[in-house]
Length: 140
Image (cartoon, rainbow, N blue to C red; front, side, top):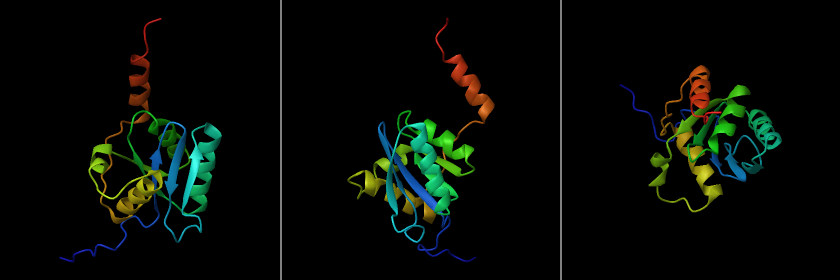
């Protein structure tokens, strides 16, 4: 049985996103763009610009931390644009040493994703998500 070297990329075209309430930091592989980390706002136009940039950089897989509710619009826009989005449990990342700010966090997510060290969290299909959202609405 062949053993994979640690530096072999499992997802060579992966990106990492550290999302927040007012902005999202995105890291792509350094060979994809001279500017490998960018900040995007949280509005729909900003999310579409993020998706455009990711596609222009040749990204096909995105690691997205599941913190609060900030990931939901990012997940939906990127998924609609044809990217494979992995929702990553924030607890997996919480205890990893070496991250001090948003830029380093998104770069670390990108690196771990490219090496195949992250696992995608369960995300139900669209119909179940719609039903869950409707059932959580307060009664009229």
